[in-house]
Length: 97
Image (cartoon, rainbow, N blue to C red; front, side, top):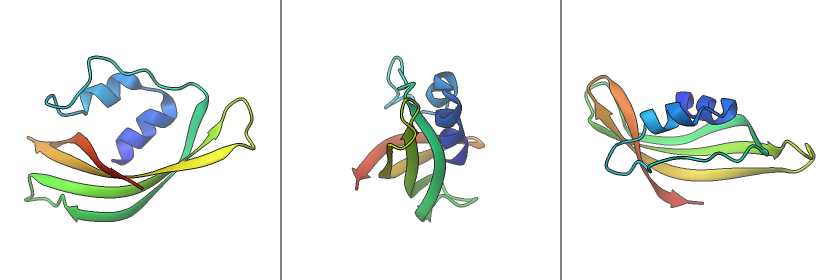
């Protein structure tokens, strides 16, 4: 989860696609260059431990406008993740808050 947030912050669409489960991954991903992601809060986790194959994370990601830094907002989402070998892959957004 944290590495995917970092990829959003850096604008690394390739990494985001690489860490997205193939069953739900889009063909391409276009990031909004006006969104500057600057803070991630992990609000809740379920499963996702060393011996688990699935996990759920609820997080809040904060961003601001690159054009007008006074404009700030956040996105709260509950997401599923699936383990593929040693790597966790993003599955899908289960809920937006």
